[in-house]
Image (cartoon, rainbow, N blue to C red; front, side, top):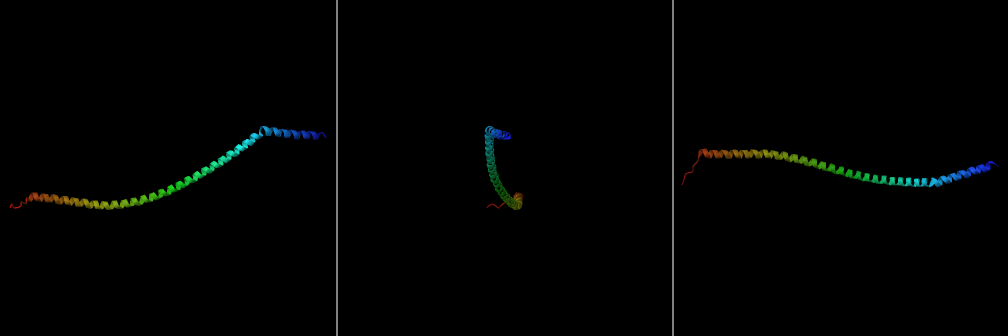
Length: 124
């Protein structure tokens, strides 16, 4: 009979301690849990947004890489064409210089021959 009131007292004391703990710390713990839940959901949404941005950036980089590769191939083909045209033009330029030099030599010799020979036409 002595143990029943003590056991009841212990149960009541533990219940009142739990109530004090809940009233003093419990709501803040619950608020803390709510804050942590909100922070976790915010972090998750931020990570999802970041993942989407990274995916978009990756697509932009892939398309930029493809465009760069295409431009590089076009540049190489244009460069080869320009080299080919330059080699053809340089061959023609040698011929032009040779022709110009020969015309100059022929003109100079004609001038010298006219002066030296002094061909006079008979006057009428």
